[in-house]
Image 1 (cartoon, one colour):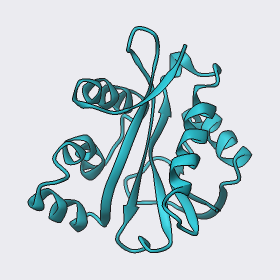
Image 2 (cartoon, rainbow, N blue to C red; image 1 turned 180 degrees about the vertical axis):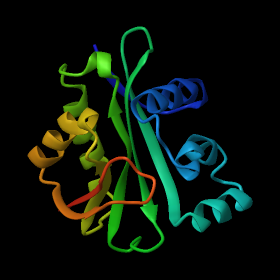
Image 3 (cartoon, one colour; image 1 turned 90 degrees about the horizontal axis):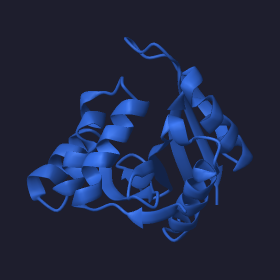
Length: 167
């Protein structure tokens, strides 16, 4: 039985390991996400995340199995540049060994339900053309996230794909 629970200190290490496993090529700011989230109430940390363009790391949730293993993660945050209009999906992923069991579906539906409460016009995310993210692309399409921009960044192996859906 999979449950979705709010992340806490004891689950954060497991969630961080899952993110590193699924997304081995992360930027410095991405690598610092969980540290920043843990310390998000500190003024200096707020200033640091703002320097990276993030207005607020709102919250993270994990999908856990009956043994409290983290098998998926999702979260939401806001960017400084569009915080009035949009909320963003953060670190959405499922453990590769647990895919095909409906965990991604549960996480995306949970994320959508929570994000609706913020009364924004858009729910946005970015992903990539990495073949390991193919199942996620299908899920995003199924839930109405349309591609709005694609960008090839310097030193990135894959194309960054920006998606959004209107509420």
